Length: 629
Image 1 (tube, one colour):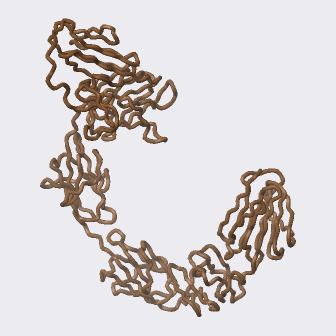
Image 2: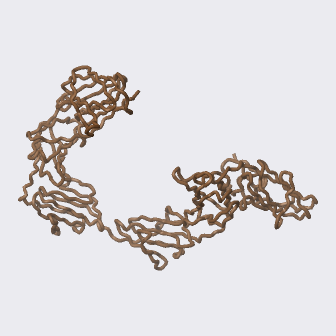
């Protein structure tokens, strides 16, 4: 069963449409009208024979009228001349749908509910619009009138004058304009109310019973003089032309004269001036960027203008060779420093932008503005400054130092069609040419975050199983294949093309007097988290033991682990829980340090955290678990 949709559209004559969501079989419904003479009904359909829309008249009787329609036809119910459709009510719901009684309305009905009843009411124009004016137009075919907030159009007939009914309580001004572009209206006057012209249109707010006259003929032999005023006292901002071909008029005296009907063009020098306002005989025209009109009557055009002047913007930097400054575009020449300062000359409206980049090997640490050194937004590799006034900017730069290590683990690099780790800083790959397993890179935190992306040949999809410190990361958006990775150094990034391993726990039991120093996943320090931490099953742990004992015994889940090269013990976690025991069977061990640990706080992944900003959870400090609630 189809559901009815009713909507009101105030375009042209206005439209109240009752349409079905889907086409269906023949449907029977009724239309009830108060007076059949108040309506005009047509059957609307599209003919596939001639590919044209057709409207066939339909007879309507007072009271109930029964109809049957198929999916190709609809009924159009139009208010007859002199009437308005004031309401349309649905019998199935009793819902009343407002019909704008200021516009002659149209209702379309198609594929409604079986047995539905539409009830219409109507009114005479005189019952809805109680006031009227008499409008006389010298050339009715050249003029159109808009009313009702520009939603209703009125074309004038040859019979003059023509009565126009309106509601004085809420009617907006009548708007008269030429029907065809290039033509115009010379004058509109009313015997009651107000009338004024603006931008080739005339606005009339009449009184009841007023007579409105519209004249389209221009007295082309009549001189028209325009007076120009400017707050600057000069008129360099304006060029006035007229004629075909256009000729420039002399306005140095503050006025010019043309013939009525001549088209006049105002051309503003927008490269050197801003037109803040324009008035015509005291009526505000707002901000104008261009202005042309047909000369009608003497008038005064007043302008408020701002002249653009060059102004300096000074860029300061302790290491002036650490920045590159350009004006307006990255393709423009580099601005050279003088006495340790880069001075850029700007001018509205176009030259108001300064672009600052770090020189090769540098990054931007901070940007401040003015004498009070107000911090402003910046990026490590770019600063864009838009300004309309003289000012000083202070840029703090530093060398990019690759002094942190980050490990990248890839389970199967051959399964990835390509691998990218583009830095937001300089677009270079932060983790170039990775191999399967652990890859350790020296990184600069300036290059964080990087955007990791790749294509998984095994799943025919983008690489989307990327973990930072064992936490899964998501793409930047639903439409992006890149995953932003905000590494901080001493991190491990896992990229899995296959199944993601389960998490496991590792804990140490270290005999008093022995000290452990090592890392897990190649770069994450063990110091401070020996008691308990979480990693993926299969992750790597490496450590050495400092001891004066002749012999040290290490077991992993009760299986003895032998030291490798340089006395380093290495194992891969294979169980959900891994217990590492370190002891000195000979009983000879180093004396335990008076202050174990370095006092720093680590999370369960071995990542050092700020003790002042701890969220609730479990942390490691001085080799012991600490619970923050």
